[in-house]
Length: 176
Image: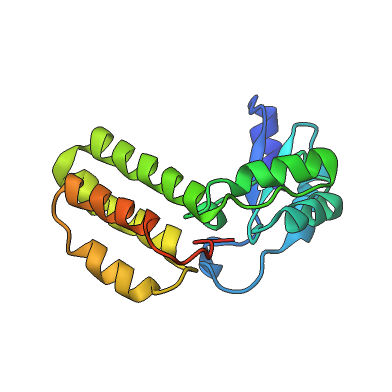
């Protein structure tokens, strides 16, 4: 709370607080009581972060802490639509369905193409590997897709691989 008050006194307009210390790393559960105490002790908007992986959890955290909102981290890796689902749920109480498998693959393809454009062919291909892994981590044949994709060396090969995923008969979503 002391640091939050110092930040507020220094003119910081808002603060995001993760519910873990650095020593905790990513182990254990986020601790929301401290975030609630920071919200009570300050006047600026405080955003809660940590272990928020669903619209329901976001609403629960806001109700518990009184935070102005939430910040999503690792939970959005491979499912960037999660942020929109959370926003809609917080506004309406309804949670939109995850995109269909075809929609998810289209999002993945645009994302990978943007990585190639932004980082260039060499680095874009390498960075795309971790993103592909995140998108496919809950889907069928994850390990095999990851292994094959990680051996691809060219942007065109990666995009062709994603295009081939469109043509599979499996209708399961990649991530939910």
